[in-house]
Amino acid sequence: MNATLLIVEDNVKMRNLIKDMFAPIFKNIYECDDGSKALKSYALSKPEWVFMDLKMKEMDGIAATKEIISKYPDAKILIVTDFNDDELRKVAARNGAIDYVLKENLEEIFKIINKQ
Image 1 (cartoon, rainbow, N blue to C red):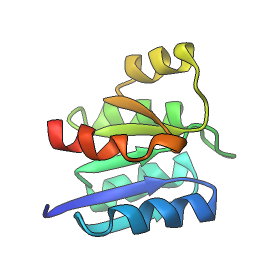
Image 2: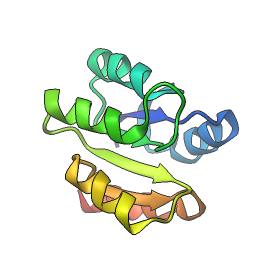
Image 3: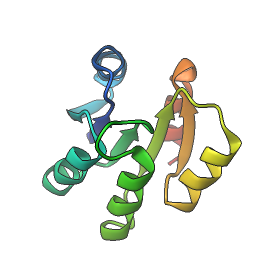
């Protein structure tokens, strides 16, 4: 795959795990630790995919997803979180996320990417 990925995750270990896991299939990987930084990074890099955590300090993943989608409606944002919550899944979908994956099931991301 000749695509670009933006990882938005405040936990450095998790961010590195995701980066290592997906480095073989993404040409370029950008990363940041907060939703507000994701807005700037997305505008600069225009990645094909964004893996977005939900709970972060300055701006959470839902707010960042909503903001990115409002400016870039074709953005592919995948929520990657520890929160197994049906209401959060619905809120994420309403705000433009294409899917919602638990961090314990990162392998599911490969299936989602291949469907798109």
